Length: 336
Image 1 (cartoon, rainbow, N blue to C red):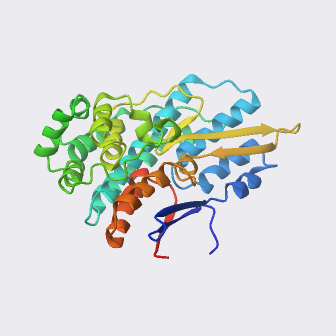
Image 2 (cartoon, rainbow, N blue to C red; image 1 turned 120 degrees about the vertical axis):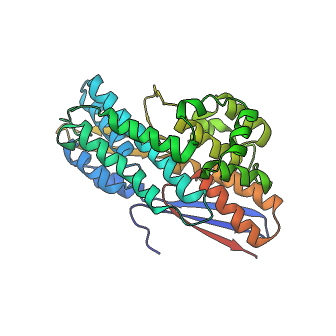
Image 3 (cartoon, rainbow, N blue to C red; image 1 turned 180 degrees about the horizontal axis):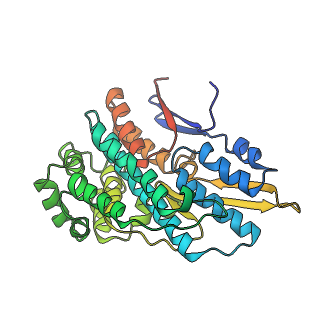
């Protein structure tokens, strides 16, 4: 089967040998080759067309890499606005995963549509001519009404309390009181994991430092530390890390872009004509779904602890969703 530009992941769980195989088929080499010879302006136009998931983060990573290659100093006000937009994209992605992946029922279309609207609104409002990631982008005004409306959405549909109040739930005891008291989708999802004894699903000894994930970013938060101690790096702790990141305004000080799924890096070199000579992309899905990455480690744990094939299929999909690839995947169970 031909793989499109977005890529695909092929996962095989062999019940006979109790082994997991993860093969990511991502034509990044073709994408990178496609960009060679282009001007910087052409690259910045192409990137959001090539990446439909986290396109703002991809665009910011591309812009940063190109500006560095050109030796252009970054405008601090513009950079702050661009990062704010990417942070909003990250939050939007977390919300979509909660609404669409944590619910055994069909997602609420009205909530999904409401979450989808926030990014184009912010981009059109915050940047002149709606151009956020070009060499001549300019800040218009950061419309706080958009952010206030987004916070209200989180307060009502995710946390059932003010976001800043939820962010102060720093112990598992306080978190448990929230889980027990609330009927929001996230609280119900965490409660279900506990009730079905799946909180530690997929937990393994894979080094956190070798992931590119939300859990890695939020690992030093007290409630995440407590969850890692009790449940390990399984599904419950990974779900919780999303909520913690939604409730805590990020302040990244990295040389790379923090996208919804982890660290995203673009590297650019230019030739004498200022055209692209080399272009390299390292995306979190390529790290987490590498043959010996965190996804494979958790799947291997499931193979050692789950005998029933239907149950294994279900558990594997829960684990894969918790790691959250940015491309589609195929899961195949083999019996010989």
